[in-house]
Amino acid sequence: MSVWLITGSSRGLGLHIAREALAAGNQVVATARDAEVVRAALGKDGGELLCLPLDVTDEQQAREVAQAAVERFGRIDVLVNNAGRGLLGAVEEASDAEARAVFDINVFGLLAVTRAVLPHLRRERAGRIFNISSVGGFTAGSGWGIYNSTKFAVEGLSEALRADLAPLGIHVTIVEPGVFRTDFLDDSSLHSTTSIEDYAGTVGKTRQWALDNNHQQPGDPVKAARAIVTVAQADAPPMRLPLGADCVARVESKLETVAKEVEAWRELALDTAI
Image 1 (cartoon, helix red, strand yellow):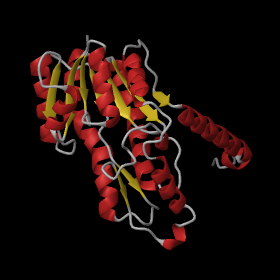
Image 2: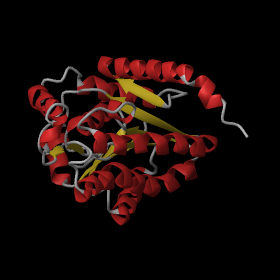
Image 3: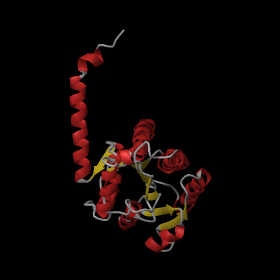
Image 4: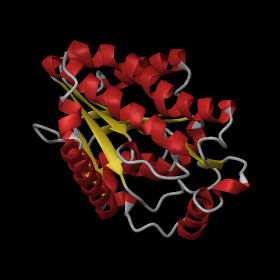
């Protein structure tokens, strides 16, 4: 039995992870801005479940949640940084306030919760951290520039965090979901910028794709959650966990493109030594 602390547990992938972790016999601290919504989805506190309010951008509250988890269950074994939001629009279309709002949750919120939980994991010299990125954290596309940049940041800090923590017995895994049937494309999760006509042929197509595919995505979030719970039990969890056939295809395509570019420009790249 492990003790899981999950952010963004009121809906979507976070809710499914909480359910699957409980079904597997674990103890779960499920958090979201509104704990009552979590309780309505998972059931009242008691036994193996503790529902707590958490705004991931509030570091003091994050510390209080981590302490409450330890007081209730004795320790924290698995942290899932799932809370996040999206922004759809061209890079130029995004205002400073819109860009900062996405970074505040997706990057700085993740860091705040991680800092709050790590002292408890380090004390145990064990633990697992799952940082929920996206296929958009590995390969970017028109209309997703700001969102992509937050997830690229998550991937970079997670790689370094993995190296920091490996000697302490703590494993870090970056989860890269493709397109899964959650409410991510709803207005409640995905915000949209004002539009500039010059981007109608690029970002405009992405906006239409989001409308056409909302709640039609091919990925099963229950299976994604189950995969994460499975990996949490592995002796040697991977650095990256791509989820979904679309994610695997896009990762493979980018790796092939990067390899071709490196080879094409190898001579110039190497001819830069003093």
